[in-house]
Image (cartoon, rainbow, N blue to C red; front, top):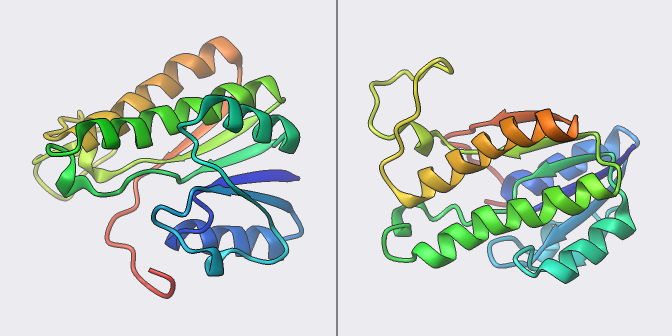
Length: 175
């Protein structure tokens, strides 16, 4: 399958890309290298150094790739800076998401896997359950929850599958 991994030069994205390539998929990576490293990119992947906040560049690259599945990991994971950098946080999260989703749909994407955050739960009592009502307390959590809600709405209209993941406390090589 043709798979796009956004944020594929980052910690989690680069490991995911490696596994997808090992499984025989054709993998493309889009990353602006603001948090990831070029050395993390598997040489068998096609790499595009693109800032997903740039609408035209994003659209052009995604239409060229024509991904069947998108794993969207690109984000600014600086949750602690959200209240002090609201434009950067929301544009790196929301704009990067929407500038991936729309051209992906136009190019025939069938499924998107989104990396969200436990920040959507705010200060709810742990352990969190998927049935808990999200109550984000910062702009990072708000932007991630907005993405989740947009997926629910747009998937009904445009008939695509989605998966939402909320990893927490991940660590290891390439971090």
